[in-house]
Length: 445
Image 1 (tube, rainbow, N blue to C red):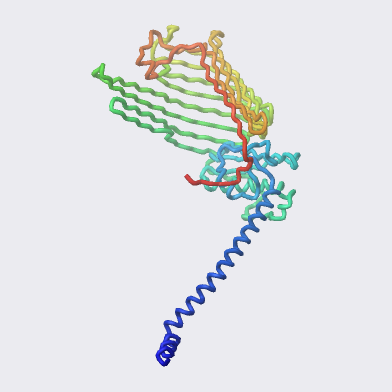
Image 2: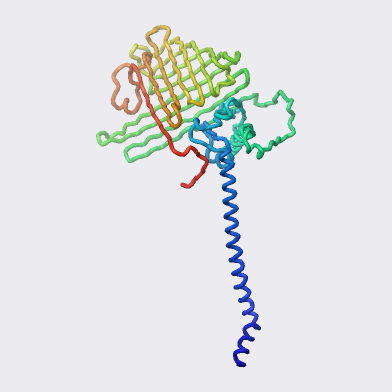
């Protein structure tokens, strides 16, 4: 059998054949060990998943009350707690509120309220954000303060050992009490609030709003100077008329005030306004009114709980485009008004409501009363009741022009109509049930 022996000898002495044999041997070894590795990795992942699930079972339940928070980002970055859909289920109820500050920035207030096992634990954190902060910087700051707020609660659980405390020292002097501000706390802002243009074959509508703010806020004083300009134009072409119908609406004005802090509960202010609005027959209107305000609660806690009462006494000069129904082209008027506001944000819901009443002193029958409210109450877990109302009694339309209003003037809002009252209301009931967890984040579509 010399031919066969020669053939076998040729195969094993051929380098290509040796490489192929080694390749197949290594392939099967790799496949075998790789499969075992995959099984081992899956087992490890199952162990990790079980560990994470076990830890989350011990983690507190959190409900966040915040109007402008990025919930997806918060739940992704701070995934060591359980987020629930209803405050009744929560161990930690977090309120995030904000107020404008000097320099055009914002002060965020974080109120952490412990419930169930954490009942009795309650505290507040504050953070200032400059007016130049980007949305990403604000989002990171809010998430950082939420993490700090969670820490004291987490330390009361087995997961507390995972937390560490760091302090970033920027080298600044903590004893500095005076700020050298070359602008003396004045902040200026120019804006173009809205420029809209809508065009159709038979109709063109243009609307624009722009203005300027100058504000100064300190502990003792609050100033504002604000000119604003609103201009609108509507052009309608109908088949019944050769010439188009054109409506121009102008509403320009100037708002200003100077408010002095008197105490934790009292403040006094002087308000000045100017207005010209052709749709309301106001050529020139200048009003100057001093006033006082009393806050039932200290101003420092007004972000979550505020009940205030305001009284103003004012003088106004009124100049009209057309003669009024009372035969006036201009007049000087004195009036006074009182206003009450209630704003409460609590774990059971929130209340925003108030009233205002005004009256002309030369004729006490010329008055106006307004009542408004927005309330959301959580009756029990999953069930909420919301209610809105706005009601006005109108007896002070002294600037109504004499004569009948045309249909065009009414439809194009070039003329104010007489009315005795206005009323708007809405009510809503919502009920949510099912899974209480909102930990999962899925941003697809």
